[in-house]
Image 1 (cartoon, rainbow, N blue to C red):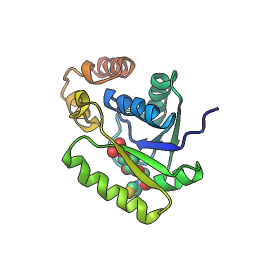
Image 2: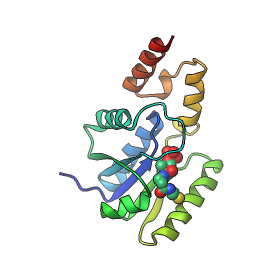
Image 3: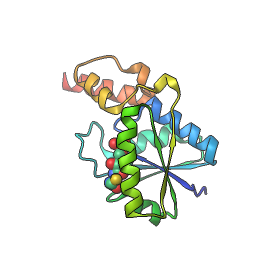
Length: 162
Ligand code: PNS
């Protein structure tokens, strides 16, 4: 059983190829990673937490990756798991502002937990779950941004609602 020392928290709604790229990089750097799906995201959800966990587990099944979910503060979840490193992806300067605020707030809440940043492949540097939701709502083609099973689930959902 792997016991990752680094926690990658997020909404993963939906899981994108950019997230998977980051997970692969985290595994290469740290040997293993725990991915933590936040339950209390205020954003309008596309997939339930259970569905997001399923997608993550299916896509990372062959890797030394643990997938969990959490409610409440991410630093408390990290502490409870005995993990002192949070991992986040930074794509753009705009990301930096938000990530900096979050990292500093988390540091105030838990000085024993630090945040490390990884840049995703330039292929995915522009990719965001928020824009994917927007393209989905407008009926745009999303295949190139998503793992096949996530894309298939979205397509099936569109068929049901049309
Ligand atoms: O993928 P996202 O939506 O950018 O991830 C944001 C997330 C889930 C990491 C962040 O909202 C979070 O950590 N939420 C849990 C509640 C919490 O600890 N909030 C304080 C962060 S400063």
